[in-house]
Each structure stands twice: as structure tokens, then as C-alpha cells.
Length: 625
Image (tube, rainbow, N blue to C red; front, side, top):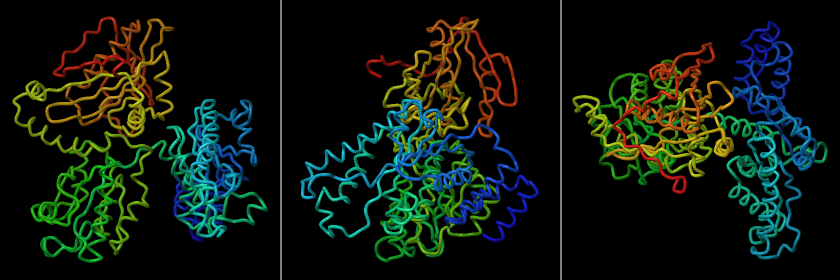
């Protein structure tokens, strides 16, 4: 750390803006408590030297049954490393229940966007005999969890904040010995029951900050510091505070950035041991006949679990195509098969170029890709020529591959939906649609041959996780890129001024699922009265199939139904949504104002004539939606 710290001190003295990037890099690279506190002190000096960060900071509150100053410093530092300027509120020691319930408390006046609650694990105890059976003890654990979730509900209702609720560390002493696991009333079992109740009953706006897992990963004794508790009421050891701060920053980041979408895989010595072109199918190592082969199979097993969660799998290998496909088609121990792969590139072109081609084929941004390879030269080429792609260089031992991919934390979902599990099938059948398009003599004929059906429906409770997911990860066909949590989506559904709908599309090849999210806002106070397009995002998989026209027809229908005389649209440019820069002008919207941050448009609703399409559109009744 000495040399990087010297560089940071020099940059700070010279007021070099590169200080902030270097500070973030040093923060990400260290795990030591004392070094992070040193970096936090430098951050505070940087704020005095450079001034506050540009833009509104993220308002984060930490409250709980502990002293929180040290943890607050670490959380603010980790958020900086994750790219977030933060304004951090620290609650008073063990005053979190009052701070939540008092509508005029400093916490509620702060109006946090994210709140970490650290409840008292020491008070989470069963008051009855330790010998009481599970049926007697479990309702008390459920009631303890319900009280905590009730506090979360109160805070969320008052502030709209997303809640990070820490669950409870398990005791690390030998009290009761092995009997602890048989006694529901033991501190060990009662806290486990409470943690399960918290996780299973948590609403969408509550995200479990899994302290139980963090302590188990580091070690219960290493995570505990009784002296620090008695002296200054710290939540745990310095090492646990670092783990906890990293976890909070990760959860905050997950609320605002989508996980990676595509895992691009090398083949030789990545999915199997050996070189398929030299060793042949019989000579590669994969399967249960050797420890090394079993490790490769375990890695494939984990990769398949990612596919089942909606991650798209692609192959990028320097190989002859036929040889590379052989193990997928013929090797009995292979778990991955060609049906699991949405794009297969085995050739002698640079992998950086193949990855660009895969991104084009799938219609996805390179920043949603993760490339995994055992060859450092290949990884370096991808880093240099497609820097938006995240790369993982696998180590020498395949037994570590799964852990490396897991610990990257690049594919962790906030929620899972049924559409995630079907994503690979949706992309695979897309190739059949492209083949049909190449055979069609003209576009209208091709569109008619797809036999498309669209279902236009107001948002439903079932839609909420998927709609929130799409608002947070759709970047390309997205006019305004407004990000929304599940609780914010729910509030819009209940708003009398808003009109929210989805479009689902299917055709003779299969079901695309939910492909459009649109939100409009009625404003009858203006002259002329107006209908504002708040959100319009769409899956790039259905571009140029007249889904755009179907969506526009519905927006204007809702505007007319609400008595609006014009529809107002906004385009807010980002680094990724250039494809919709001309969407509104192409639909005869007239520009009314323009700046670097946004362009505004309008079109009369009273003179709008719906566009005829090759899509059969239906609207289910509200009772059936």
C-alpha cells in the first residue's frame, strides 16, 4: 500500500482529479481494516480539497443496535469504490425503533433512499425452557421476525426507501454442546429460525444483508469481538466490519445496476481438460473417472445453474468448429449441450472480434458480457480490444473454477422470474426466425408469416418483479432509462395519474415473453392537456417487427381515453441508447426543445390514426389480467 498511498498523497497535494480514480482502485484492492480507514481519511481530505462530488449524492442511512461510526466510514468508502457518491446518515446507538417510529425523527427527515438496519442479535432469545418443542418455539421466532419486518414496513411507507435488513449472527460458543442442534429454544436454533422467517417473509423492498452467511464464511469466532462490543458497541470484529461494508456496497450497487447477461466460455482447459484438436473426444478430461475431470464437470454444473437463472451462454474458442462441437454432441460426461448455447464461435479469429460478433448477433451491449478463459494472453487481448467486457482469468486448478466465478458476484439476481429460465430458448429460436427472414421476399410477407400475437395488459402484481428488472437493466431501446424498484412500480400502479402497461409477444416459433414496458402520465392541468411518456423500453430481440407501432397505438389510445389532446415524449441520451435517438421524430413527433441532457417532442392526440400492423393485438379484461 505504501507506494499507491504516496501517489494518492501527491495527487491530493496537487489537486489532481486522478486522485479519485486512484482512491477507488486502492479501496477495491485492499481488504484490511486499518488501510481502509486510512483511505477513508484521505477521502475526507479529498472532499475538502476538491469540493463535494457533482450530482445529488445517494442518501444512505445506517441504524441499529450498535455504534455505527466506523462502519459508516467503511460503507461510504466502499460506495465510492463502486462509483457512488453518498450522503450517509448514522443513527444513534440502539435507537433504531424510536428513529423509525417517530415521524419527525432525524432519520425520517433525512428521507433516505437506502437504509441498513442492524437489529440486536443479543436480544433475540427464546424466553421459555430450552427443552420446549419446535411447535412451541417457532411461533416466537416468527413473531420476532414479524416485528422487524413491521419496522421495515413503517420506514418504507414513510420514506419509500429500499431496506437492507441484516439478519443475525449465530453464537460461536460451545454452550449446550451438540445438544444445541436438537433444541429449538437454544440461542443457536432460535436465531436460525428467526433468520429463516425473515428471509421467507421479506417483501420486495426488503433485501436481506446476510450477516449469518458473512460470519460463517469468515468464521464465527473471527467475526466476533467481545472486547470491542463492551468497549464501544461495535457490531463485530474489524474484519467483519469490512465484510459488512463490502456487502452493503454490493447490495446498493445491485439495486441500481443489472447483473451480467452473457457468459462467454473458452473450451480447452476451461470446460474440459486437454486440447480437443490434439487429444480428441476420447482424450479430454471430463467426468467422474478422475479428480481433475470431476472438477471440470462440477464447473459445468454451476454454469448450467446460471443458465437456469437466465444467463445466456456463448462459446468463443480457437478451434475447428466441428472438433469443438464434438464433445457437446457425443461425449457422455458432458453436462453442457449445444441446446444450452445461444452463440457458438469456434474459429481462428481473434476472440475480441468473435465477442463483438456475438454481441451483434444477440443485440446486447458488450458491458453485459463476461469472458472466462484459462489463457492469460487471450484474456489480455479481450481486455485491450473490448474493454467493456468483464474478464475472468481462471487459475491452474479447475477445482477453483466454480469458486472464481461465484466470487465474481457478476451474476447475482435481486429476484428471479419465470421468464429468466426461458431466456436461452427465446434466443435460440431467434435463429429460426432469422432463417425465415432470409428466405422471405419482402418484409411485409416475412412479418405476416410469423403469425404474431401481442397481449397488451395493465401492470399486474405478478408483473412487478419482471417490470422492475427490465427498468433496471434495459439500456438500448429505452427512451428515458428511468430506473425503478419494485415498490416504486407498485406505487405507479396505484397512481390515478399514471397509465402502465406491458406487451407480451408470441409467434409461430415460440413465446418472446414480456417485451415492452410503457408508463404514461396524464396531466390535465396544461393547455393543451397532455399525456407524458414517462417510460418506453423494449427488448431488442423484437426490433422492426411492428411492436413499436403496437406500443405507440396503445399510448395514443390511453391518451385519448384520458381526455388528453397531445402526447409528449422525451429522449434522454446515454452512452447506450442511441438506437432510439430518432424514434419519436420517425413517428412524426415534433421537437419542442433540446439540450445536452434531453430532447422533448409532442404530437397531437386528437388527429392520431392508429397504424395497421401484422400483429394481432388483444387486451385482456382487468379481471383476467
